[in-house]
Image 1 (cartoon, rainbow, N blue to C red):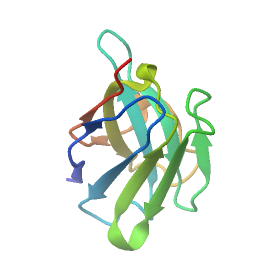
Image 2: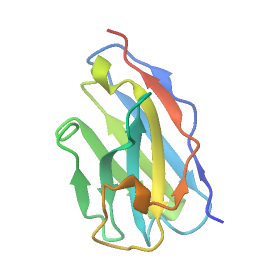
Image 3: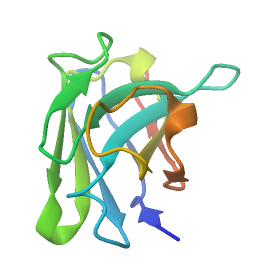
Image 4: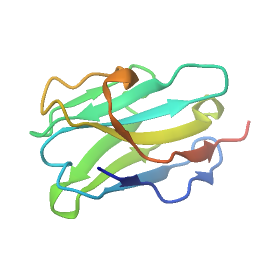
Length: 125
């Protein structure tokens, strides 16, 4: 059973930055697809960024140029650096892994089989 742990979220003013981290219990970060997602009430979980075993990255258009996904395979940790935050970025943020894939990662949340507990990020308007 893979466990993903995300430290607490936070509130940041519009235009500010925040770094999210996700610690994984097993050697998954260096082997499988990892991704960051977010969800607001009443909406489907939205894929933000994915990174495969070779560090190939895909971003959603909504965050391209503002968010950066990265990983430290030695520390089994996934990161999401968020800059230029907007009120519409307010959501629950989740990290996840798809242990059935090592590349050709998808933004489809239903394909990811292990999830962090989620943390709230708030950008007041």
